[in-house]
Image (cartoon, rainbow, N blue to C red):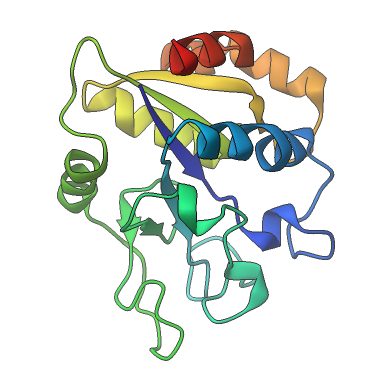
Length: 200
């Protein structure tokens, strides 16, 4: 089992962030999942966003490198090296100078091969016995897009129920999404199930 965190950045997670909403998963990740990972030597892979302009269809910038909003809420000691930086909702979309605050960003473009290579490095190739568990934000957008890309590459995908939320933070909306469309790309898994797998 591998865990990939998506968009756990301050613009989404911290009060005052450009895209902040009250989302229960953030506190769960910070207070329960992170200590568990630290205690059991589990390291997470991470996908973050560089949402500077230009970005097609989005009129404002957020998660801007060099600003507090870009910073990850995950402590360094539980993260694997070489985080993936995306520039659109789908992780296959990147840009020139992605994540480099001192450089002017290019326009987003799709680079599915590089994303596949990153996955092979941080979690390995798809294996029937291996599962990628997704955590973070948001279930109705970037988590969904990430699940699709993983599924298309042959990975088995699970969503840690307590560690994901929608943009709105609505728990009713979250449950509805697990029924459809998320069931096409992966399955929900509970914290109890994850604890049993990781503790042994």
